[in-house]
Amino acid sequence: MAMKKFINDPDNLVNELLAGFVLAHANKVALAGNKLVVRTHPKAASKVAVVTLGGSGHEPALSGFVGEGMLDISVPGEIFAAPGPPRVFEALKLAHRDAGVLLVVLNHEGDVMTAGIAMEMAEKEGYKVKQVLTHDDISVPSRQDPRDRRGLVGCFPVIKVAGAAAEQGKSLDECLAIAERMERNMATLAVAVTGATHPSTGSVIAEVPEADMIVGMGQHGEAGGGQQPLKSADETAAIMIDALCNDLGAKAGDRLLVMINGVGSTTLMEQYLVLNGVKKALDAKGIVLARAIAGEFLTVQEMGGFQMFAAKMDDELLALWDAPCNTPALVVK
Amino acid sequence: MVTYERWVAMVRAAAGQVRASQDLLSNLDSHGGDGDHGTTMVRAMNCIEQAVEAEQSSSIPALLRAIGWAVMGVDGGATGPLFGTFFMSMSDAAPGDAALDARGLAAAFTAGLAGVQKRTRAQVGDKTMLDALVPAVEAAAAAADGGGSVEDVLRSAFEAARAGAERTSALQARFGRAKNIGEKSIGQPDAGATSVSLLFKGFLEGVRSHA
Image 1 (cartoon, each protein chain N blue to C red):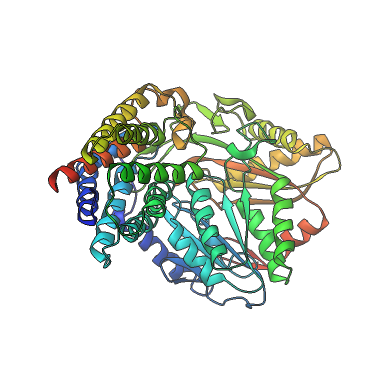
Image 2: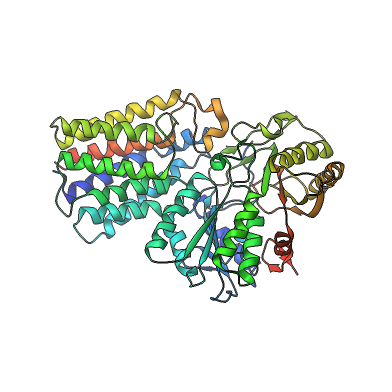
């Protein structure tokens, strides 16, 4: 099927989407330097800065997390492709302060390499920078060796709690420890029902047979059973939350934050149905649904499906999740 | 000897080779990847040519560093850091401003490869650019050790890179996005390895044209 998207010049796509993005959220975000997304109202230089990087085409992620209570700067790359080290270094230079900078990196080859090179350069300049790597995708089985686990929507809660800690004036080491605790206690599983097209090349991303769904769009698809006939919202919710609880070792009495992240064409209606299914499945296990959220935070163009995220929360993580923020993607008052 | 001017001729010819194969590279990448490798590589080559134009010194290490940094700025996922690191690590190994002889050129390639291998866990056989780069650099070193000329070194490197890239057809991807399609990745060469082969083809052509 031919691609049906409202675009102009494929080579200028990122510039144009960023221009529109800051128009839509002018009171929160602005552009600086070489395509860096920054806050319209910068936070005090005495507080730790939180920075991230990643490919474009996943809107509102990642620049949608820039704003009070979350990120200070995001470095958007090309469509589905990480930015290069020069612009990430530029962001670290711009964010540089005595309090330090926390760099949130999603585990994908390009992102990790770019971050590593930019971090080395920043350290040579004497900047205080620490990195947290998110690898929440449980479709690759091993929690012991998470190097193959991709970073999915889990970057969002990590940015939320680390950003809240930074806003409260916590030190870089404290912010890092909070980010890492969130990271260790979270898991994400994706399900796809329809594919998508790359908006600048027209390439098909992930094809899913008409009557099927694919749970765990990773290398092997072990978690959640891989490709199977499309199931109901409740059945799908149960399959996925079971896999997530197993991975997290969640047991009765544990408190979970659960997020249903629509990735493109799956409706909010369906996301609410799935979330309701998650609640029923958790009730049956005696696990507490402490916080829940549904919506589009990290998308993959018009792909159909969603990412289900779950994390074991403690009092501090819950308080940081509940802390105020004012960003294009999330407002908490 | 590989003088500054010869380096310029080499990288310009490499840019020409990549540009002429843009559609091929994108088609290879659309099988498992997301079809943007050709575009990304051409953007990288444009960055290289701008860096070469802008470079005011006649220092080989400075030129290689400027090229590496320009390639890294391409914002194309792993492509920029990997190819950029190759040039920047060559720069670190190039001795001062002197022209390189065959051994010096092979040593620079070896340093470039070592830099790349520090950045990725991919190994030969994983269906990545390393399947062309590793044999190319090894063949260059062997040719230089055997007393070959600069042109011998580059011819050996290109032939090994081309053969390495062709061998990736039979391999299943274990790295990058293409690993997600598993066995379906078998049957076509890897786009990154093909790019490496084109770079070395250009290097050889550049040296021959600027004897």
